[in-house]
Amino acid sequence: MSQYTMTSAPDYIPVKMLREIQNERFMETFRYVYANVQWYRDLLEEHNVSPDSIKSIADISKLPFVKKTDLRDTYPFGMFAAPRNEIVRYHASSGTTGKPIVMGYTRGDLEVWNASVARGLAACGINDTDVLQNAYGYGLFTGGLGLHGGGEKLGCSVVPISGGNTERQLMLMRDFGATVVSCTPSYFLHLIDHAKKIGFDWKETKMRAGFFGAEPWTEEMRRSIEAETGIKAYDIYGLTEISGPGVGCECACQAGVHIFEDNFYPEIVDTETLEPLPDGEIGELVFTTLCKRGTPLIRYRTRDITSIVVEQCACGRTVRRISRISHRSDDMMIIRGVNVFPGQIEASLLAVDPTLIHYQIVLSKNATGLDVIETRVELSAEKFAELADNVAAVEAFKRAIGEKMQRTIGINVKISFVEPNSLPRSEGKLNRVVDNRNK
Image 1: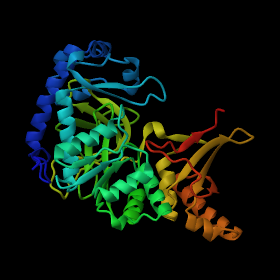
Image 2: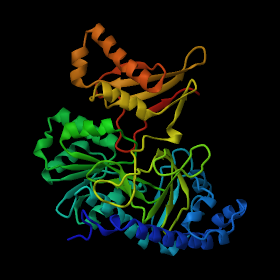
Image 3: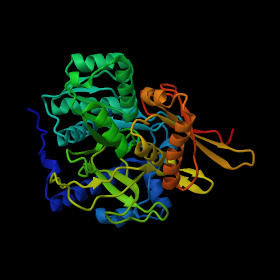
């Protein structure tokens, strides 16, 4: 029987003891990074911070932040603290906007990571009787091996199918008796689409839970997934720079992501001033790794916008929760001076009709140089047939969506309908925004 259960000890330790553990691990990490990363020593000197002034974790706000650009600028190994012969695995970001971010893991780092993922799965009632079909991509992306290692740590039977082969995914899900699936939410929506196309019945499977992450998704999308399949959909959180999936995870209450803060120390800072904010205030999430030795990070700016939930969860865990991440600060679109986020568009669509789960946002400029935002909405086969040859109904449906979006974001959005299965699908992270303004 796995040591990780619904009542895993690290999740329930008294808060005073948790703070003592965080303090001890922070001071050890700070000294370790200062001794082994020349770049970090230079950064402290640049900000006139003396190592002697850091006495406890209460002094963390005196330390400078680390940003994604810092990791790219030190590519590939400039942020490594452990010697190369202690690195047993590398992971990296895709590098689509520049050089990839490269992170190294010691054997101990992998143990901490696997244990964190296992705690997240266990928090939702998953155990060693479950079959986990892991449809995250394997490779340099952290999703595949992250869920794989955590599932095995928990004692699950893991099906390492990775992404793609959609029809085979559904076949093996049914034939292998998978009870749990893990993938990006956009890929699971693709599975739902294909299931409808081939007449696949989710009731013929043993599926009871799904763990979705690696891209923002809304509460409305959760409700749509659960209604379509009958499973419980859980949010698992992580990022390549900190470790990968398993930095935090929802519990069975589905009331916010528990951060495993004995391993990953969270802060919320003001997006403008970067000053620390108290629990309950919305701002940017910042992490310090407390146990990592390959590439430890102190005060890493995630760009994720959220808040730390003040109330203790009904599950009794003492590790704090963050509210659902609505957006990233770098996902923001500025349209005629108005800040717009893709999640607002999605929430508006699903509020009007839960079947409108496939959409694309296209940004352009009109003849006078003003920004134009268009949302291309893919209709389901049923909705497409319902509206066929009924111009009045089409216009009324467009108007309902447009009015909802206008109330949500404060500006008019052009609504275009497209045929079923005509918008791009993705087996990994899905980019829903096409920005043609500078073309």
